[in-house]
Structure formats: structure tokens, C-alpha cells
Length: 388
Image (tube, rainbow, N blue to C red; front, top):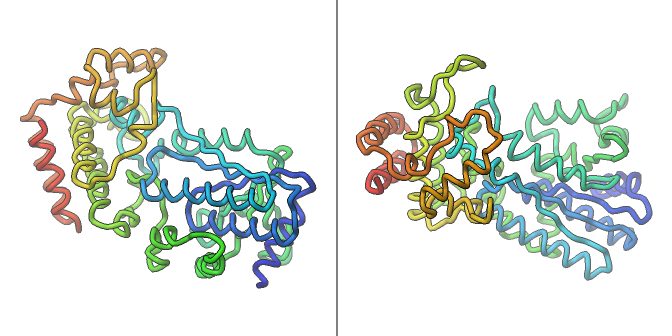
């Protein structure tokens, strides 16, 4: 395969003797393809002198099925390399509990991100990514491709070296020098069809069935990320995974809609918008909608259980602790936060005024009128009303 030869040549040029290679692994098709290409290179070149570390940035809001796959593949990958005498491991980096979506949306009242205010990118992606960059050695491989989007292509062009010939004909096309480290994009020019063919080629070496299932066997151009992402019109992964996961699509839409209602936002006097944080009643509806979605779908939000602060999980703080103890923990975590007026008290979130909540539900019912999952949205809202 010419593809293999091209990628192998790139790896030959950047991976020295005794090098530890870091691979940014998301669990998606591109980073999986990159990982198996590195595996193939190690075996064909008999490079047992190198070490491999898969590094994963977990927002604690990943779609649960993708997150399970990611962990299972990293374990499978490391085990296979070790059987060939190659030193291998994986590391997972997560945001601080107080930087998670659950804390920021429910405790601080952050509204749904917009393209003008993408607060989620900084807290859930960039800060954990800095931990990865600091941990990485002199070579990090990334599975970014030009074809993903025009924004991705522009970003890659701004980072990598100039090639006076054409795409893929210079080593600089794939390389970014950052401080004393190389960031390498070996599959930059691959088309999506080539990625799938590559993965099919390695289907006998690795168990990739779940990955194909997650992408609808290549029939849907889904991009996985946070289940609650409001920067997309539809989170296609929810549709691929079926009705159970569509309850989270319903909650994602609810979060978007309550953020768009001016009366459910505090008034602020500066910034690009005069609409500030979500009022407690809006956060309460979201809190209850999360619980309803878990119950109706049978799919648990792992981030609520894995993020811990002051010895308590976020689930315990938000749903289970006595309000006085939960409030104490919140104030202790936020002791240096200047605007404490925006912090929700747990009794406000758990026990809202029913008349106010019914008014919000009425607004959301109108917003859901043209949704393709209107029935599921209404189901979630009706169960929320029962809870309060």
C-alpha cells in the first residue's frame, strides 16, 4: 500500500532510537487509524527500542459508548504491543471537577456554549490538553485530517511548515515544531474512505467491530464529542446509537432552549451579550432532566460518578447529600470565586417552585414543536414535572 509506505517514511524521519512516542488518542476513527499505522510500523521495522504512550483527553462528558470503546481499545493496543516486547502504556487526562460541564452548568449556571462564547473548549479540552503536552516527550502523533473541515485544514496549514511543491510532497507538510518537540500529522491528507479501508485492513489484527458500529459502519459522517454539545445542529452519535441515547439528545436540546430564553438568564452590563448566567429555576430543570434521561435510557452519566471533589462525587453533591453539606462543599471549592451570587444553593436546584417550573416547561413545549424528537422531549419534560 502506498499509504503505508508514505506514513512509514514520515515515522522513519521523526522517531529516533529509544524514543518514546506519544499518540493523542480520542477513540475516534482517525486516531484509531493512526494508532494501528504506528503499530504496523513498529512491527515491520522491528523497532522494539521505542516506547508508546496513548494519551486520551476525557471531558467526563463523552458519549458513554464511545468512552467505553476508547478505554477498551487502549487496553487492547497496549497489550498487543507488550506481547511484541514493546514498552507501552496509556494515560487519561480529565478536567478538574469544578471545570466539568455539570459543575459549570448547574452550580455556576453557565448557559449553552455558542460560537462567540465557547467556554467548554477552554475548560474541557484545552486545559486537560496542556497536561498531555507537558507530559509528552519529543514526538507526539496526532490524527488530524484536512478533510475534516475547512477550519481544521486552515489550522493545520498555520501550524505546519510550508511545502513549495504540493500537499504531501514535503516532510514539513506533516510536521509542527513546538518548543523542542515535534507534533506530527501522518494522516493529514487521508480521505475518509481511505481511513475506513485502512481500518478494515487491520480488522483481523485488532477487534474494531465496536468502532464500526459507533459510526454506523461508515454510513453516517458522525463526529463524536461531548454528549451535550450545543455547537452542532444534531449530535448524530445519539441517532446512530438508538432511542435510549436520544433521551440525551432531548436534554441537549432542552439545555440549548433554556439558554435562549432571556427571562431564564440573569442580566449583565458588559460583554458581547446582555444575557448572563442561567437563573436557578433553569438549572433546576436541567438537573432534573439529567436524572430523568438516566432513568428512561438506562445509560448512566459516568462523569457524575468519576469526578470527585472534597471526597464526594458530583452525583452525591448534586443529588444525594444533605443540602447544607452540599452547600458547604460548593462554597469551599468556590472560596476564591469572586461572584458568589451566581452560585446555586442545592435546595434551590432540588426543590424549585412548581408554578415557575411549569411556566418554563410551557416555553420548552413551544420550542420543541418542530423537533424531530418532539415526543421524547415531551416525555422528558413530563417526567421532570412529576419529580418536582
